[in-house]
Length: 423
Ligand SMILES: Cc1cc2nc3c(=O)[nH]c(=O)nc-3n(C[C@H](O)[C@H](O)[C@H](O)COP(=O)(O)OP(=O)(O)OC[C@H]3O[C@@H](n4cnc5c(N)ncnc54)[C@H](O)[C@@H]3O)c2cc1C
Image (cartoon, rainbow, N blue to C red; front, side, top):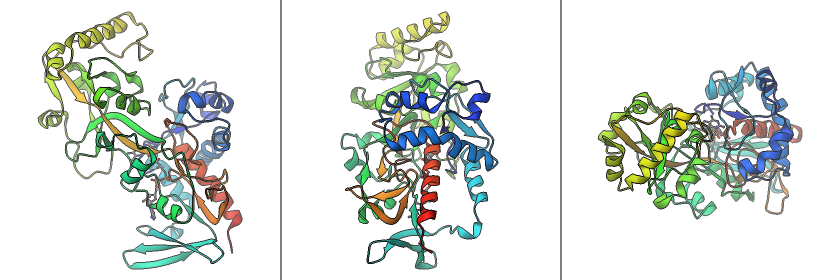
């Protein structure tokens, strides 16, 4: 959370009303299937749509956070719904820490096992820290260890069609699925594990193959596939529609084409902001052979072994839409700038596993359930471990701003666990 931008999808909030945005949970539920492939009649989807404003938005305001609306929206969304706190993910994390008692928080302490009574009730956790192994007794246990996008064995099991050799990572380093393993061993069921959030808004980091490097303004570039054809509305570069779209292209390849003016406006942003190494400059990517350069689009097409007529045709159509302020075929709105003067560059788009939208199955009150739907006594789960909330929010597509679902599922599980906790 501390590394996150802090984007949160919420509907029917006072922040939306103040900004003049007309929206309510019913509108969100109406378009949920089109946005995510999810089933709006599922209890967790309804709860997320209906309770997000009071349980997340208003609660965060009560904790002192200042929320505003961003212009991020997934393809097809009818309203601006993605909120961000002033200070982003770090501010969210600070607000949560400030709301708790620091004495109750053990850092650098890894949960390595769950402890059960003979009757099968979870009553604590086995832990490991620098001093050694130990255990903590608890009236109830809520696991919230994050996603599993770096656990490639599980990713392959969950979604055998994914071409793992074409994917980098964009999730946090600890999204290793160990928490899932603990719950699996305890008998927990999975929900919709194949729902992975796959980004495509960056190029591979030359310093660390397998890591993702995000590139600002890639949404202003023109994306083409191996045939030299545009294949995606680039204004949705940051959405979870982009990764699957890239993976559907011939040889699962695509490039972002930029002219010199756009190239000079681009900056690079590390996917992992706490990375110790400095961010490489764009020319370093050229030096590393990741970016191809040419004087004109036809030469660039030649270097990429593409049909130059396709590329020049796409650029002409792009510029006509820009000149005439006309809706672009894929973006829906006119391109933000004409593509004109060289040198031209092609950046290879990199698909990256970023979020788990499926996970451990939990009841709508956060209780972990087995394959028969029976709750495992004393055991709760929340956050990305549960596919953000309940493992069944989405169908085959993620959505922008799932931190709101993470927070809601944590609050829900906390309420119920507190009510059920043993003395
Ligand atoms: C760079 C970046 C930017 C992002 N931006 C956004 C954004 O703007 N909006 C959005 O919705 N999402 C964003 N995300 C994703 C978002 O951060 C996660 O989905 C979200 O933080 C998940 O929350 P969580 O509490 O479930 O898990 P996490 O935030 O991943 O926290 C899990 C915690 O559990 C700890 N842990 C793991 N295993 C154990 C163990 N065995 N014992 C003890 N502790 C353990 C980890 O150290 C970590 O502190 C971003 C992610 C990254 C990496």
